[in-house]
Image (cartoon, rainbow, N blue to C red; front, side, top):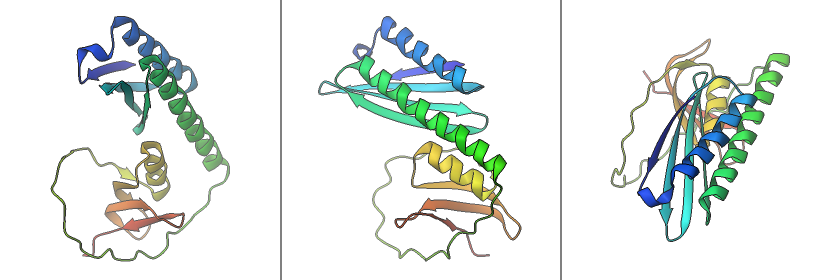
Length: 177
């Protein structure tokens, strides 16, 4: 696995902490293979250490972040969090193979236009064709409230946004042609 490390300052970690983090992340490969690469980010602010990782696994992205007063404790928490996510993903994959079920999302309610805040960050990423089930899986692995993807279903092929609804379940937004 290729591990890229970034830090806001050099005093966030030293070589022993770096090797400790790499050792912890490499243990995850025993649970789930192949993990292509991982981006590890360390930050420190007011005595609180933050560790964040984004892993690229079989076309999926798994992301987690933790905070602690000790950098090694933050790394331990990060490894535990990633391990839980990977195990949950594997269990869902096994269940999906056993029980193929078709679920259709609820009708999408249009969102009223609001005043847009100032754009602070812009991010580019590749869009791959996915089924709705795979999009939900990716949404859960990322831990986000929405996910943009190229939807492939019986009745629609095109860009769509999967989002988590407040009252449980998911919704899909699609552009009208």
